[in-house]
Image 1 (cartoon, protein in one colour):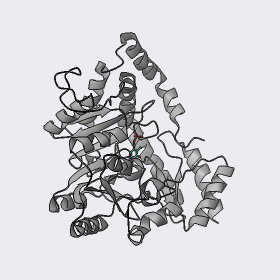
Image 2 (tube, protein in one colour; image 1 turned 90 degrees about the horizontal axis):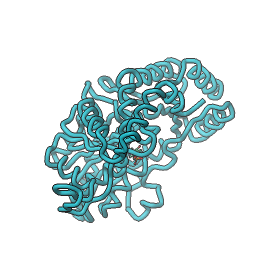
Image 3 (cartoon, rainbow, N blue to C red; image 1 turned 45 degrees about the vertical axis):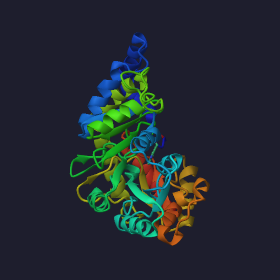
Length: 375
Ligand SMILES: *Cc1c(COP(=O)(O)O)cnc(C)c1O
């Protein structure tokens, strides 16, 4: 059994994917081939925004926005404490200070109440300038943008939606990638929409921002890449990856998002009342980058993890450490008492195999093993 079965997906789409790759090789248009523009247009349309700017990976997508918005030393960026390292890394990388905010225990996403408290504290301290909120759509579930956007308006802050795991999710049919001032996603192979290497994209409705990002990602180009009007980086999505993504996006739209939500239902039916299962609030749809359960305590989590492994069932702890406990962030002061949920979660979470091709038999095997282990 695979945690996320990319081989079975390839088997199903082998013909189309092989043809797409071969097509790029035949044309030898490896950088900026026509498939890149086709993909960007399709992604923008699917997400429901004016612009999609593809780039090298999800981390760079966020870094490009930090560059575009001129984020620098002395700026405070508010991020959830419970997320992948990258969300905090890009803040430190441009010299700004990440402010770790605790998350909601049910949704795993940034807690709007605690977010506002953190903003007020930074304003009162008067040392750093609050600039951006980066909510993460953790495990595929969009963050609470109703509340977050109210807060961002009140304190005049930008919102960057980190939808690296959120692609395909939605709130009342408004798609992940369309919230905030700009959003980013990742096409890392194991993400809801993944390519066969690294890849990423930025979404925005802002024309000027889109133009600036398109310049920054190609050496600060002006008229062309040999006319350089600003300092930028080299951050493009390969044509081969775009060609693969064009095939996979069709599969994602046609059935994968629906299939993964069927698996979610099957898990729910079998695990309800046995362990704490993911909570998807009314109006929300998750793309289930992960299906994450909560156990009573660390001991129960670790023994279930071991039991599953013993039975050949892969499971992973996302995340073993909240950001504030990462050594790389040890120089930032933070009040540990305010980060109790993220600290608790790191001790009790366990992500189970989850992907659109997981069969009902496999779900039965996994859930029976869990039920036996919990008894
Ligand atoms: C994967 C991920 C990223 C980074 O994406 P890469 O393409 O691997 O650089 C950023 N944020 C979150 C929440 C992620 O899960």
